[in-house]
Structure formats: structure tokens, C-alpha cells
Image 1 (cartoon, rainbow, N blue to C red):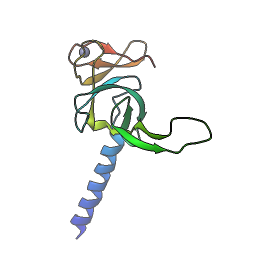
Image 2 (image 1 turned 60 degrees about the horizontal axis):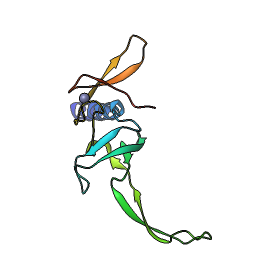
Image 3 (image 1 turned 90 degrees about the vertical axis):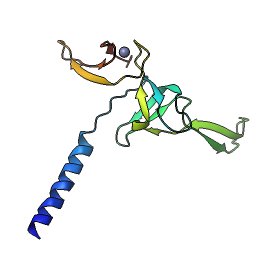
Image 4 (image 1 turned 180 degrees about the vertical axis):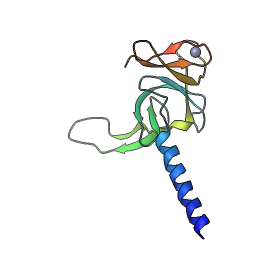
Length: 129
Ligand SMILES: [Zn+2]
């Protein structure tokens, strides 16, 4: 009885810990490639990152049709396409230096600035932001 209780609380603790430690390796303005879904293989620019949801919004990726109401303006009514955020696990960073899908690691520079480094070409990847 006691052992079981101890066990389950430990599992809960570890689970929470793991979730909280999840880091976002993708930033706004990065170029990413879709790994799954209907847009698999397509690349796009990251428009926004949602760390809490572990999701990213990518330009021209995962488009969903939205019906728009015709307002007072004489805008085009009907259907427009808008991006919908995708899970971060479904995208992978494309290195701007070597143009390959790349995993990154973090390196601390002498200036104290933390940068991402491409594991393929060992070049520092930094977006403009
Ligand atoms: Zn690279």
C-alpha cells in the first residue's frame, strides 16, 4: 500500500518536471520544415512561437479555410485561408547556413550571450530578433 503510493507520487513529480523542462529551440523568423501532416516537406518562416502550447505558427503552413463575414468595408467576403499553429514536434529547424535540417545545441559566448549552434555545420545560428 505504502510503496504504491510513494511510487505514484514519484511518477507525478517526474512527469511534471519533464514537462517544465521542455525547451523551445525554435524562434520567430526561423525557417522550419514540416515533418508530418499535409504540408510535410514544406518549409516556411516562423511567425510566432507559443511556448505554453508547444506550438509554432508558420507562414503558409497548415492553412485552414475560414469563413469571413462581410463587414461594412467592401472587403473580399467569403473564404480566406489562415495559418493555424502546429505542434513544435512536427517541425524542424532548417539551418540558414548550410540549408539542412539541423538539430542545435546551445553555446554560451564570452559575452554571456547564449546562441544556438547547428550540429551539422557547427555554425552559429541567430535570427535577427
Ligand atoms: Zn548548419
